[in-house]
Length: 297
Ligand code: NAD
Image (spheres, rainbow, N blue to C red):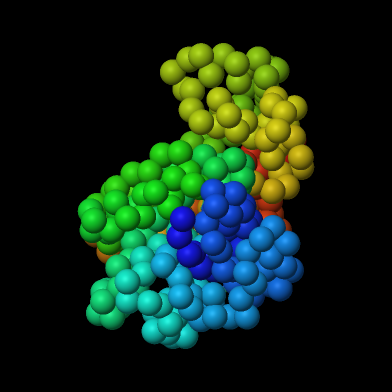
């Protein structure tokens, strides 16, 4: 079992840290929100007073922060790297820009530290169940070191390539997810406007060529599935603003390589309009309201 520092105990980080504790690891935890630290301390983690304090003596340092600016601020501006033991492994699970991940990994390497980017897929339900998919970027040897730790929090652990590759793969996946959710919403709204029952239409699509993750597991239409954000007023889940962030990362990656992503850009604009209407904290499947409100109006 390893001595692990876990920094960033939000919607994803808290359940991930709980699973590391359950697996028997020795955890020190830190978040800017004291309540989040206290909850993990109640479960048996050592509450740290700062990120530097959490990292003291850790064999593995894991971060799960909102965005690139938070990761760069912590590792580079606040120089967390200086507090980490030379033999430790650093794993950043946040979804951030590939360039940002490469920059922090290079700074870690310059200090003799080993670092991987390991963004996740699977949402808060996957984090709680310990079934996340980890998409790792870094040296092969670093991937092998990270794997047993990540297996306590996830089911599928992939090595995408060198530093930053985990972020590239994650961004491609989420761009596709954003497009699929908007497309599924559009198709369901069209069917309902033309007299179909949304559940009947969803069942038909799920067994036809338009089937996808949204129709099978995460239907955006209220009343079609239980246990989805759509069944709970779009509370919880994966926020519109987080999807908007990921589509922005896709747009940046496309600009830097002169790639064309017309559907990804269209999806980014749809989620941006939806967020601007005050829906930023709702689950991203609430994008269906953009279509139903227009249909009803
Ligand atoms: P969140 O906002 O709920 O949690 C982030 C936490 O980081 C907060 O508790 C915040 O206080 C803390 N934090 C920020 N700066 C800090 C610092 N300097 N030191 C210590 N703590 C700090 O976000 P989340 O939903 O847990 O997402 C985390 C990351 O995972 C994001 O990059 C997100 O894109 C990605 N992600 C989220 C989901 C999801 O379904 N929520 C799914 C896959 C990936």
